Image 1: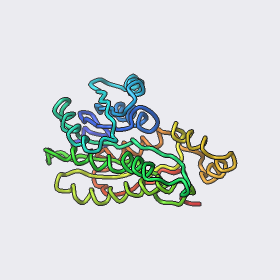
Image 2: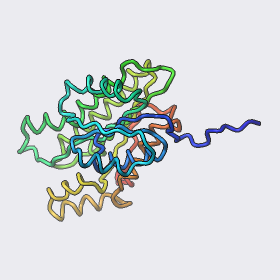
Image 3: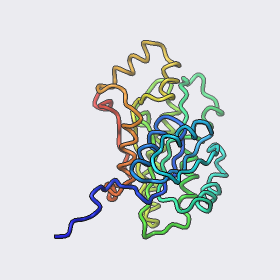
Image 4: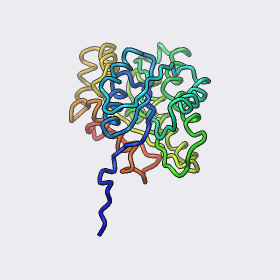
Amino acid sequence: MMLDTKINPMDLTGKQVLVTGASAGIGRACCTLLSQLGAKIILTGRNQAGLEETLSSLSGNGHKIAVFDIKNINGLGDWVKYLRSEYGYLDSFVHCAGVQITKPIRSFDQGFFDDTMHVNLASAMAITQGFRLKRDRSKQGSIVFVSSIAGLIGQTGNTVYGASKAGLMSLTRGLAMELLRDNIRVNCVAPALVETEMAQRAQDSMTAAQFQHMLDQHPMGLGKPDDVANAVAFLLSDAAKWINAVTLPVEGGYLAN
């Protein structure tokens, strides 16, 4: 009996992956793990120094930095086409970029809403629009959006952020059906609170009692960026080749409360 020589279905050797929000936190953890699995990474974000720090942590070679402000929604499609012409075929796309600002409804304004929706939701659609062009349909592509359990629950002062992340979950389902003809899977991960710079900013915006209440809702403690990166890598890989249109909570038991 012949044995399959590919014994690791999460092997990403030969794949090139575009990762947004790669300068820190979950994005950096994703880049590091995906490179360890053999992928070549195109790291993007606004922070050149942060991207270079991430680059220094990667395994292998052939990785690239592409600085871009994803608030420029109308320019994102052309930017993705440029990346493909400059660096070659893009097998996968991971959208980690996001903003989170805690504001109660009394402080709501259009600028706050537009900024949150542009970065967290509209950019995912615009990059996907560019990613799907001129695909080799014999190769299965994969997209993973990083959402949040804030899109599944109610949190005081976090309603706009939660709405944007719920939008990513809906976007996942719609695009998964629309991109079937392009042989692209679209999935999503929804982390609870993870120890990142964004979480620290959230803590800084709360009272000690409010933050302790949030901690108490995580039965397994706060997550690490690597916990989310592991889920992202799984959904990108051939181990998940028959998984499509799902949102995978990565939340340490939070939703069991």
